[in-house]
Image (cartoon, rainbow, N blue to C red; front, side):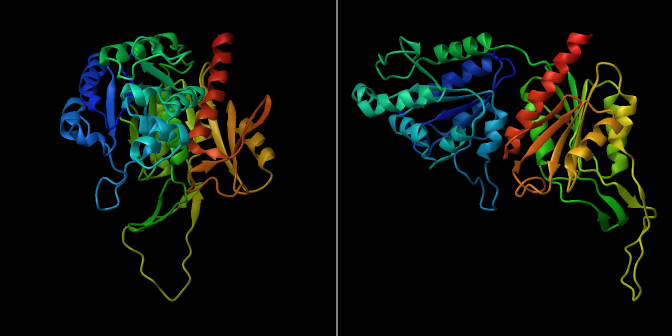
Length: 406
């Protein structure tokens, strides 16, 4: 059950760190993709070069990977992973995880993790038996983490054990067992989901354009969430600087015409389309082939409407296909969203309002309402990653309903 799973392996400063190499071999042998995050103390026991050679990925240890400002995103790792394993996990790291002391990359990754977390303690017997260590393990269990140790495997009750790290093969077996027992497929697993994200740029001349403030973060978060749930994801991305997981098929576009061509083509054989892009409604009627020079007179640009991508997909929507539209409003939000729902023949509309400060453009948070023919569902302000999860949860219900009707 580990085939295709993405595993973040956290390694701490324990003499048992050498076992991490054996665990990596076990995970990769079973088809998993492994990304190592190691603490500074961990590098005293095993070299990143060795770990990188086994995983074929750069080992992450520091927040900043270079001196040019490039940084490693613990949030992205939390979204990418299907599971996190901390093995070996020292008493110090146990305490930091239990109390949220985010002073290294491993702990910040743990605190951002959306996937289940498995912990393999490694320390001497006296440290293991100390009341503070036992209390920290109880705290971590209460948070929904899984502790794997010799003799008892999953520590469900009682705290018997000898403190040594469980054998790598057994840890891999426990992960296999977990995914086997929790392998209820998502209703969108295996389905083709097309997502649009980001802005479009409509050229005025070779150096100027009409655009908007969209960062693409919401659409990219939805694409990652759909991928996590097993969908075959195609992301039609406007001009943004974001990156996405290698499992996502990405089509980069610039103008509304480009996005229209890609979206209509991809939707023809898709199961779902989620239109999160902020597409320009107008474009210059004429595009200059040279840079327009400043003059004394006012400059007048004639604008003409662009393609209505949502309307085009709604008109071509076949039985069994699902269409999700987005609406960004400044006033009369719900009324406008309901009109869009009907006009575009969408299954539901994700409504954003610019009156919700700190959401929408260029932010990491959002606050939405989902408007459908069954009514509306309101959500609290939260991260765009969590908002994406809410949207896909709602999508799954719609897809399940359609499956029941077919």
